[in-house]
Length: 187
Length: 411
Image (cartoon, rainbow over all chains, first blue to last red; front, side, top):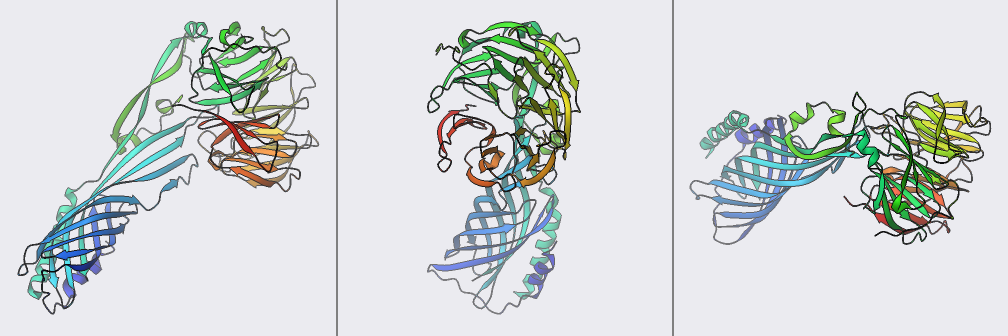
């Protein structure tokens, strides 16, 4: 719940001063986000950025983020966003890409025979939000479903009396499903 | 817009809290379970025979005898590698010995364990080995059924997927998870009388005696008659004896709690000269005239907490003393030729030191591309058994140690 205060602050204290007009030309945008992640195994915060181009009500870009929900990971993804209308700037978006592990390998502090290696998995996010236009920027709030996958291969040196001892391997497929509340500044 | 912001934000936040309980994390664990297969002891003894060469899979101990390298396939038998040309070793046959882990060779007789039995084979023709004698139930084994009529010989692999919580609830059940994990005839006529084992060996031959260590003792057999070993003594030792290394009419025995030196002044009944205690860890040991080199490592099989090389002063065999400790990665077998010390440092690779000054070992080379287990040095060739194959390195020029061959493991 670390980001809760900041999220609430952003929601209730932002000063909205002017409307942004939507042009028909291609414009570069950068959306920088701060999010609160809630899931079965607790909560975390995430920070990220999507950079791309907007045209009409569409926005498409390449993004990346980092969070520490269960594992510290950094998704890299393609992002597509569609806004309904200028008068009612509701939008929906979807992201898909790869979720990479921040730490590639871990060892047990209790047993040097335990090693885990982490490998990237798929990443999805989809949600809806609302854009609050400001003078030169926009502030976007969204609620989304997020799925991050991560593969862990664990190697354990098996106890035996007569070395060399064969190793034991197992694979964990971690699938983390969460809800994400994001506040983004669009530049 | 300001009016809209507060209710939207509040609603989104409430929705997040309300709905977050509906999404669940998942974790699936995939691994193999092993269904035990039992076989009658009589069938096992009848199946000991040689056959065509097989690819190396789960290699264990290595043993050098003349131009041939014997590579143990854990619990399966022995690969026979014709190593007359180290640059092109030939995998020529496989001797099926169920339950085999250790071997030793003398005068054309191969001594091997087969679960609890001691087997003597005539290997003068490795393509047609002949069982000369089986001494039953020398080495107690947990793999036997209570009536000793059957023995656990294998496991059938089954891929299994469970959720992670179920798997972790099984509490690391040992037996549930144990992985036992062209014919070319040749002659051994010119081979030396006795072969050479690695530092991880549990069998060794000195003159007319075969010394075989069990988990908590040394069996001594007289093999003066070659094909008819007779046990002449058994010495109890503390639990978890691991390796045995002969040097200068002494036996250096590595256990998880220390190194023992036994005198062979009476070879039929080794007598303890001294003991050097160390922290609990696996510890192969070798020696030269003045020093013993002991590697300690961690891991499930060892239960240790340290990875190091201990250099001991053994000028007085009755009172070995620690000279220096060198930090290591996860060291296993080791060997020494003159001033060159080879250490199999697990995932850190094969390390070669100049050991002319044991108090100041100089690292000459690290071969990081392999994960070695044990090494034998002979004729300036290092024969290394590693996780992915049997390697040979030419170290005639210590500044240019180079790989000359590899017999790959196929899994």
